[in-house]
Length: 223
Image 1 (cartoon, one colour):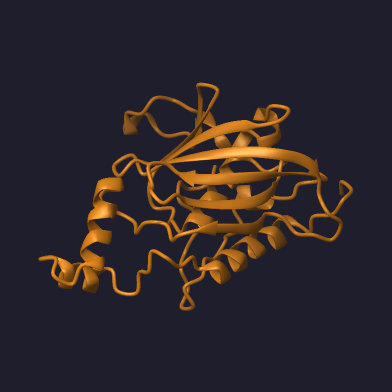
Image 2: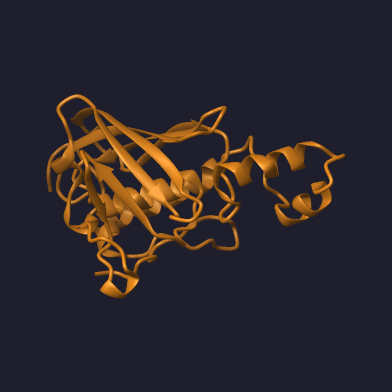
């Protein structure tokens, strides 16, 4: 099993590097089926969301990496999926004192999908408690000569890491927007360069492209 946080690291161009973890190698593992996934960060207003196309053969662990990339997270905290009351994540030593979960690296997305639409709950960072809702639809054959996972779009930047969850995030936005706020200068310095309106789409596309190329070129027929 890979280490808990194996694949995301920012390089000098502020892009993410995807390592050759087991999950990355199974991104396009011999399937011609894809699905559309809408990812919503719960309790955000206006909604922070992304939409991607992914192979249904990817493991849930790989899906976790996709969410990390498109939402702008750094993969530095614990996480888990909940699907139909079953919890999936990384197996942990008993020393962590956490309840056991199904190994997300051993379950493929296609194994948990319903025929038309599947809801998946994803929690990232058990301290800040970032709740995401994934809606998986449109299961279909992939396009010939197209690489997956593929970014389709979204709105608004994801929150900064370790900012205190939803309450802390909106406190930061209030301080950034109000030059008379008592914490404006400190917050502006701490989060210099952060623009809640802007998604770093080139970084997302580059990281997903690396993931797709290391998993193998996706084509319409199984390899």
